[in-house]
Length: 322
Image 1 (cartoon, rainbow, N blue to C red):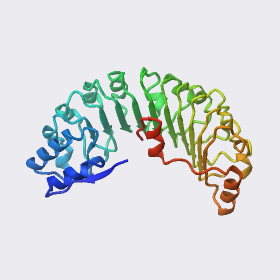
Image 2 (cartoon, rainbow, N blue to C red):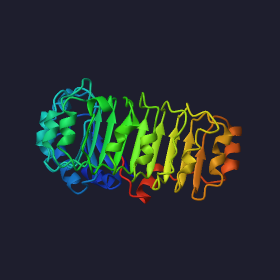
Image 3 (cartoon, rainbow, N blue to C red):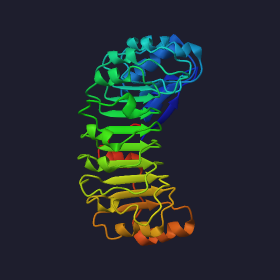
Image 4 (cartoon, rainbow, N blue to C red):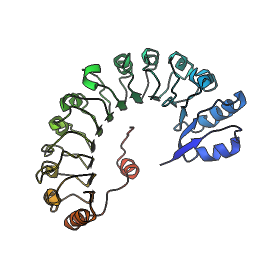
């Protein structure tokens, strides 16, 4: 897993080229010179998987005029470019753009100009809802989608994304988990601080699901995962409504579960008894709020901790964005 490379003037092109070799993101918050933009664009041609991000409060950057220097760019983010008011300048980008992140801005934006891109493979949207349905309809080949701060099933009641492998919903709301059943190809699903969601039954019927991440949901008991025959890993973080000895019993029924992570939890230690003799479970990590309870759970489970998120995703070929 690479890191983030911050670009500031004056740009040392040779040093920047070396740093991009191990980077996931290259970003800047102040304008560069034309020569520096041209040099950065040339480097990114050789590193097409590196995401270019512009962010901050600079009014000049918010015009997106600098994009004229990046006609071959494949991955772009404006997350945190707070004064951005118009996405029309994105038409300077390559028609074959494959990843786009329209993140936090001071005011919600109209996504209509983005619908001109028809080959997106990954998309992240934060709070922008106007034109969202049209954008998704224009990109039926989308494989990864992250949506933040949206009433998801109100804005997008029906979606046709047959190739969607990765879905992350953060904040916002969802009335029922049945909405996710529209995406049978999902291999990774993250539901994080999603309001109104109290029943996860439909999640257990996603036939391709490998990894499920549940965070801060108002769910008191996990459903029966017997039908989740491909589920390999579940993360439960800050699931404070899970408080009973039987809260995880349905999850223990997942026949091929290999890794389990439960942190920031109010569960009693005996909630993990159903996993003691699980025939497949190889790794488990538990955080129950005290050294004594953590130790008791570790002694009960006797498994090493789960792999890092990056390693697990890489090992199992899982695409994910948050």
